[in-house]
Image (cartoon, rainbow, N blue to C red; front, side):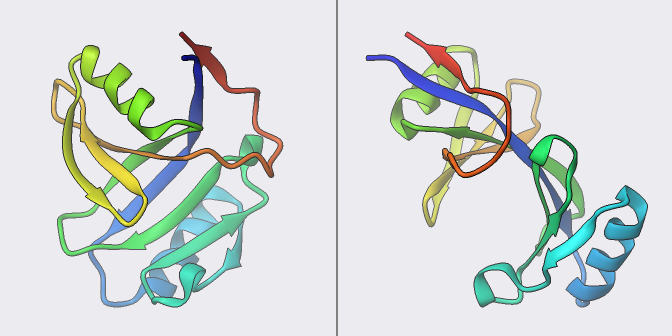
Length: 127
């Protein structure tokens, strides 16, 4: 059965005790607004607005070393994860409602549920 996926955006993982300062820096560096300084209400995420191509970009407070990772969004998590595994990716773990994956050469990325309420380009349809 066909499913759809596309680039959702970028997550800036920050090993920091001050999410607000990290969000302020990246907001100014990227020229975007802070749309929600406490996305999810857990003190873990600050979501940006006015992003290029309506991409989802946020700062995430993490325990591991700081890095940037991307998210791929899909309307069928199982099908997309299987497609990516066939390309050589591996599952790292399931978190809340998404999969953390690892590319064959080590980069981490997430596969998340598709959001239709945005102006991003149409998703790719996969058989």
